Every structure is written in structure tokens, then in C-alpha cells.
Length: 454
Image (cartoon, rainbow, N blue to C red; front, top):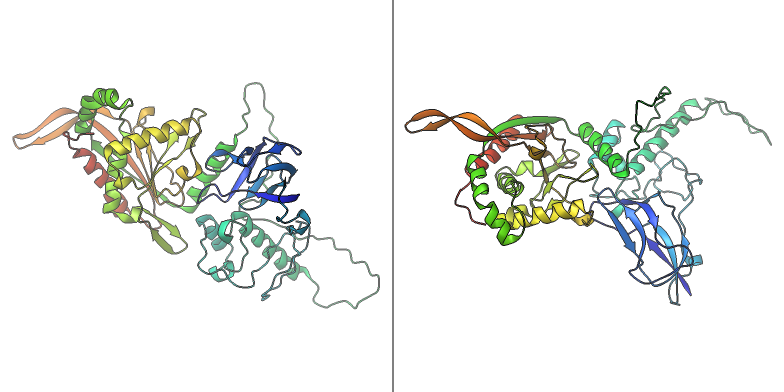
């Protein structure tokens, strides 16, 4: 008999942790390889995690509701194999109650720590840091050289938000201790008991406890607890507004030709393909073309570096029946035909609403669009999906009187008009570039070929 560690699997390129939703098996149950053992929620999608080996579930190491980083053991399976490592041979992670010894200039770490973070023996070269980690480091005056010595618990040793906040707390604790210690050392006295009346105050830059006055609610108010996805959305939106200085540009577009073309072919398309053709794939196509013209909009910011992406992966914001929002990604959208985009948009939207997307289908987006027209909205100020640098919203299409220019002169006509709203990160995208990009998307939509076949 042998005990095998079952670890939190990596469920997508950008997913570093997951929340245990529900254990489907209990200790003592017999399980088969690839049989679902638990349900896990990530910031992308909820999914079942299968057993890595067949045997008996010997031990559950994490409780429901706990957040677990990728690679950490979550359970142990007793198998019949004799060559696997016994549980007594498996090194356990140090407990959180141990004490760290780390002083300025140390080049080693110990296994004892609490409230601190051990420095690495050697700096991590060319390690990726998320915009959130870099922002916190900048606020706390932590240089990239110092950050390279911070041990990361994320995938590929990346520094997570928890890691950087723990390191910041430790630095503040050390600074407080050095500030309050006596200038003259007292002589050593046997069995002397030293009592201090001050304790180091541990605070983190983004999680300082806020004391709010007690509020009493009467029957005229409903109290609704945020679900897990809404909490994640709320945090992401706050982070994005803090990280990126948003600027929004509006352009009005004449989409009369586009509307007439869709009205002409939508019935035959539905009969032939068995599904609807909407405006969204046409919007995706126009944005993909414009991104090839303005590649700076297809980028991200890492510290003082601009990372321009070669792949054009367009996320499309999708409203869920629960009222929440999810953003599946169309990979390599610039390489797809209009028919291919239509099929992809419909497939992703349908599976998103049925909660059947895989984590990879929600990862690696480089630019995002949001179609707010179906809700009757003319324009808006969309919030950027980090670490992207821009997002575009397409408003409702309305008939309006407009000036039509012809060789014979100008006249007033009824046209199908729509606003597009383009929000971008003013750290690297100035008004001229952001506005030009929005105008280019509008040009592609206005010049849509009415003889296009799908």
C-alpha cells in the first residue's frame, strides 16, 4: 500500500489558485482514476477535478471554502502500488506558526517564519510579475532587484498578491521593531522576564481593516450576500480602475449597409446553419482588422515595459442568467472568416450561459469587446480587463436623421446609427492613438461590403 498526494491541478495558463467548492467523495470511499473527486471554483470557471490514481481516499487535506494555490496537496489516495513514496516520506510544508529569521543583507532563508517572507538564496531572473504585484511594490518602494528575492508561491514561482502583502507586512514589522528597540542593551540577567506593552502593528497596503459604524436595517431593505463570482468581479473592477487611468472616446457610426445586409441574409442563414447570425461576429472582425493596423492596442504593461502581443485574442463580455458577467476568448480572431467567427461566437455564448466553458477558453485575451446594444444602451464607459490596455463597447442601433453627402449635393435621410465607446489605458495609449483606433473600427463597419457571403 502507498499514499499518493493529489494536488490542485493547473486549470489554465493564468489560473494560480482555486477555491474548494464541494467534496464529491468522503474519506474511506473507493475511487477510480479520472473519477470526479471534488468541485473547484477559479476566477474563470467552476469545474470538477478527477482523481489522479485509483484507490481509497485516505485523507482530505483542505476544507470546503478554502483557497488553494496550484500544486499544493489537497488529498491523499491510498493505492496498491508499492513503489510510490509512503506518507512518512513526504516532506510537509512548514506550519504557519513557525518563526522566520531574516535580516537585511541575508542571502539564505530558514524554515522558520511567521508574518514574514523568506528571501531566496538567488534572485529569480526574468520572472513575470502581474500589474497588481508591481503596483503594490511601487507603492511600498520595493525595487525590482529586491522583488527578485521574494519567494513566490504561484505557478512557476510567480509572486502572488498574498506573497507581496506578506513581505510588505514583514518589512513593516521589522522597521517597527528596529524603531522601538532600546538604544543601550541591558545586561543579561538569568531568568529575567521582559514585558513589553507595545506590539508591532501589521498592516497591508490594500487590506487595512476599516471600522464602519453599526447599521440597523428595517423591513424596507433587502440584504443580499454577494456570490463568489460577484465578489471576484467587484475586486477585478476595483483593481482595474486603480491600475489603469481610464480615458473613453466615443464615435458615432453609420451602420445602415451592415443592418440591411443582415436583414437580407439572416433567414436563409438560419435555415442553412440552424443558428442565428448576430452583429457581434461582425464587430469582432472589424476590431481584429483594426488591431492589425494599430498593434499597440493589442498589448499589456509590465512595470515600465510594454508587451505587444502577436496573437489577436478577442474576449467578448457575455451576460449570464445569474446577472453576472463572463468573458470567453476567441483565439486568433484575425485568422477566422466571418462564418467561422459566427460559429465561434454562438458556441462560446451558449456554453458560457450553461457554465460549460473550460478555463483555457477564458484565458489569454488581448482585447475585449462588449455589446451593450441589446440592453438599449447607446454608449458607456467600459472598464478595462487587466492586464489588457483597452476595451470597446457597441451601443444600440437606432434610426436617426442624418446628412447624406452625394455628388449631386447633401440631403437628409434616415440612417441606422450606432455609438462605439472606446476605453483605454492612458499610461501608454494617448488620445490620438485611442481615438484613431476607434475611428478605424468605425470605418471598417461603415464600409462593410453588402455583397459579402457567409
